[in-house]
Image (cartoon, rainbow, N blue to C red; front, side):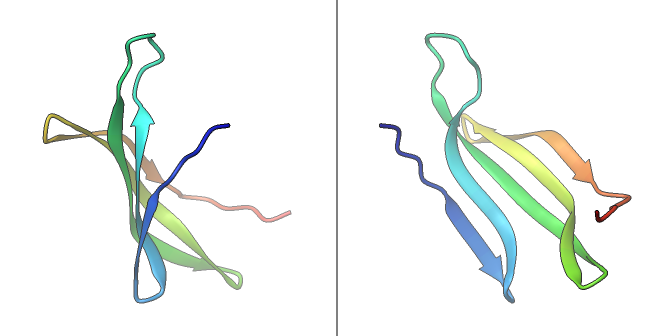
Length: 78
């Protein structure tokens, strides 16, 4: 009985941003905050276009706090 939603933003056919309200903490009094994932770069590997630079940011009191940065440097396909 859980419902979730997110906003997906595309530019030139590529996913660039995902926004959703998420719980930042696991405490009983935790509140949901806006969490934004942005994709800054893609690279082509074999026939696949893969996101290679991503940031995850919490919006806290109108202040952006980027807490996770992802840089994909190696991909192996099985």
